[in-house]
Image 1 (cartoon, helix red, strand yellow):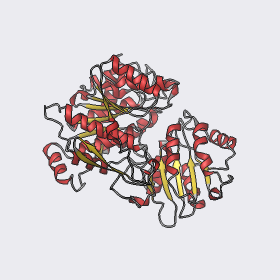
Image 2: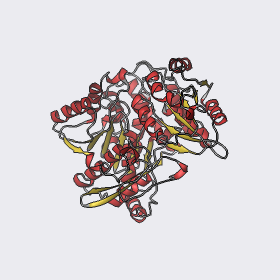
Image 3: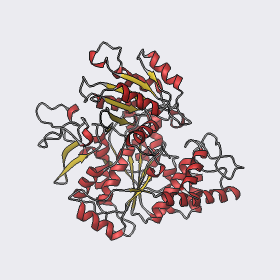
Image 4: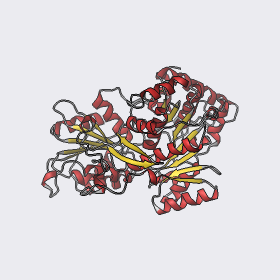
Length: 519
């Protein structure tokens, strides 16, 4: 099967929260609402030779921040010379983005990283090649068809189950030494939970996917806590009281050892005259200012110093936003836990030096999260952020407060129908209200963009929510049209903020950077 064939199969398969067909079907189909269970992915993995047992895993669940935490941790492990696998979802532009591994193997990887750590030149994690993706898709597809024919699977696997099986098979082929896995949905019944993690990480929890996970923070946290194992290890931070209670109850019941990442948060004491809200634009004590990060972003890098185990650790991350400090803390705390208390399958200790942690932080790649992209000569720059739920919208709103007050702004917004559309718009749209009494906002614009996705919120729903807020808007016919209109109405010194969905951000990023259409 070619890469293009695999992509066509995935398109036929449909949304990730659906099955791939009926019990009588031997291949992808329109699908039905997903009934979550680990039995199906375990059956599929067994037929593939149990690839997930060939490497230890760190499993990361949460509502927001789990992808940032996973990508940061994987970057640290890779900088330490460990053959690393990273599995995340969803993708921005190409499905290959979800499955990444260290480019070098064995001693070559360790030697390369050791030589380049100080200079920050260690090679980055690479996406699975197209040819290998197509080959492994065919392998997993064939196994699924055989299992259905034998009556061992009731229906074709879901999109996410297929991707998970491909990722684990690729990691096994590449002989990775450690996998970092981002949970797709929930935790307890997510396909990634088919591994036996040596460390479980839970990031911040909020209200999302209520149709599947529950209507309260406590219920959702209980589902996320399903990634814990008896006598296992949990790395987390204190958060919402309901989440703390649910996670704590599960941890006590399973006799889990907890690791509090609070010691890896930035220092509380700041220089005189610097507010806590300025920490993303300023460095920690003694570090000075960062006036112009790469790509001309007015948002400062997260730069500060930590005192850990008697040494100073210099944090310098390209992930913008004060909220990222919690995700960075979780990644650092997990790296420290791995090097202190865990070994690789061959018995070697995980040699993760402070220099590797610092290099990994600097080299982290996680686009579409407060990412600043140039619009080109004579065009406004873009600020891309996948704020796909109310918590994400509030985080973006906090970041926007750091932009110059008089800078012209245009919002390009679109989201999925299973998200609280009106609540997200209530958080963001008033910041771009050209009819408000604030003279600085009179040149602003709101552009609503329909996403090409089966779960996309209809244009009429986006418009109705904006009308109820009495915020003037322009309804675009497509994402491409929305971006072109935004560039037309936004002066070169202004900023275009694209947000609301990973699918919207992915398409706009591809258009802005001249990349191919999403696959």
